[in-house]
Length: 570
DNA sequence: CTAGGGTTAG
Image (cartoon, rainbow, N blue to C red; front, side):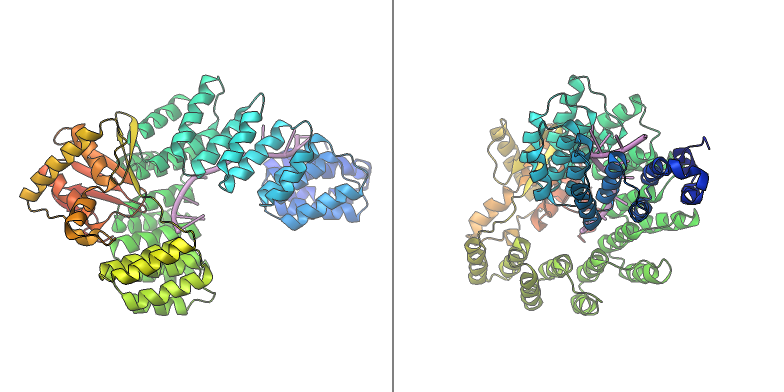
């Protein structure tokens, strides 16, 4: 019996290990075998089996050592099984085992992964000296709650930082919508001579995807090629997503086509890419190929498909897909799927049907589902239903700022300024504020950010000069500023002015200064693009002979020759 | 052989 359990697990033999306990000859070696079995269960991703084995050990009176316990705790954390984790914790306290650094770290990590940061913090405070593993777990656990500054403080205090803690910090920034910080840290790490691995690269690529800057994306892609990560499937999947989100569907497609062994994430990433760019038919066609290749879709695949239908106005296809998901693929629809369906119906003005759809749900709708319907009420200017939906939404979450903003937009569109003021007053009293909208554009590899009416750019006066000059030219071509897109109560003349100060127009102005006719300008925005800016971009694409690729909160608009790829449906 | 970082959607 020289073949260790690790080898067994490599060949999928975890079941065999299970019966070792009944072989008398091995009885003296049982603890060791069990310990190694637990480890191999964890390595093969069979966390529940590992937990089961731990129970069997306890009932057969075998005292597990620190190695087993640390492994078990890891399994609890990965399965987010807090109650089992707590059981192991009390077991440790009751037995006479000493709490070594491994066990302390494993406990802290388990509590971090289960979301119990308070307990994790208490154990971490008691730990002296702090070790690297525990600190890394804490950095990751804070960062996931959005407390990025606290995570950064712990990170700064760590000595002899290794690859894993750099990766944890980079991933923290990437997931807290601070892609620039993530990329900055990645550069710092390399200057210190720490070599990234594929897991670091996943966070870096994801940061680049969120940033939406194509030059940066190409640089990361070259880095991946030059450092031998290109064959790693998860890295390729992340690259497909990155190129889609940076506006280059063609590059995403190239990587997709060059990937011989595609998994469900590869397919879903590409489907999402088509969906984001409003190419609903291609998304559906790709799904058919995926099924033909025998790859099983998951719940995320269906979210992407429904989203694809929604943004392309494919109502009937969407309905069929929703049914097929339940009937053919036996996937239970969750809130997200219902949200997508409500969005699909709502965008196509089927507001009553969307409401009935919500009422037919087998579980209580959440804020996302109601929020989809409220967004549709805004788009189609349905005040009556909008008021009802906003009320439902605020019953679930009284501090939902989005509900107030959408409701005030609905009133503003109907010129009901008294109601707009009421809603704003309510928001103010509750201490809620509207999220700040901003746009950004990459020029020669540098990302420039703009807020509405922003004067902070060093070339600000030049940018405004160019903007006013551009407005004149566009007006000659038939553009008229749409004051209705301004959702605050101002005089008409002030509104004309206000709508010209929208951040995406400032970004476009800088783009025009730095490009020539026939080139492509790429702009990203953290919110939905307004009607006036959408029209403005259409005119600009024709008059200035630029292709304009604008990424808004959820999708892409490709403006060319005066038309947009969304066919004004967004 | 044990503890820390991870790709698709929302």
